Image 1 (cartoon, rainbow, N blue to C red):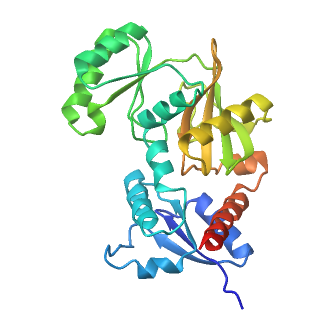
Image 2: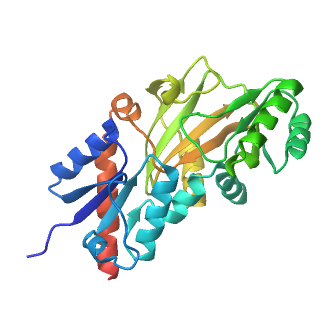
Image 3: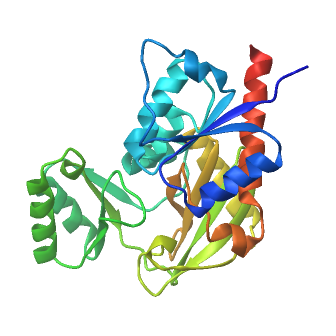
Length: 291
């Protein structure tokens, strides 16, 4: 008798998405283990306990914890969703932009500098306002809309004094006058599942910052752009944020590899958690066939 697949789920906190995912795993009768990244540890000389998993789904809130766990698991040959390579690209906005540019995917105009003087020059070339983003971060945190030179000098100096590696990379983006919304598109593998508008009067349209989700009907253009963007970053389970640029049309603003979907699932009425579990099972079975 063939044993049931065993799936690990690496997570940090029991959010509504994790509850839905665990329910979907149970509904399929899968053998699964909850792997709290605040509790587990890895013995780098003994991968044996981890080889019992046919696949591991990574849902860590911490980018670093998730990335390093994926690197270890992938080095041991354990299938993961997503892979460390995808996490490395999507977790870093600069790397994402580079890969999107290489693939010819439309995106906002971005500039990068490594000193406050060079960053100020880049900002002045753009003209005000501009947006300054951390290269690593989520939920719209540490974004700054810079309206004039005084603000630019103050914010750049503040970041330089903070001293971390992240704050020494100045990732500067044109400010886009959005129509009070952006579009979040969710993909699983080569399938565009669903999409929602995220509407807000604030220039930051993350649902984590209070944006309201509304149904969006996927168009052939949206599907084409998102599939191309997904391929550029390595594919998997992704959320792609699109912005309606007044001159360029639809552009890809960000690609997320451990997306939240607490708004998208009820608004779209698509069972995203079920689709995620189906994909993880597909990856696990494909790995067993190769072996």
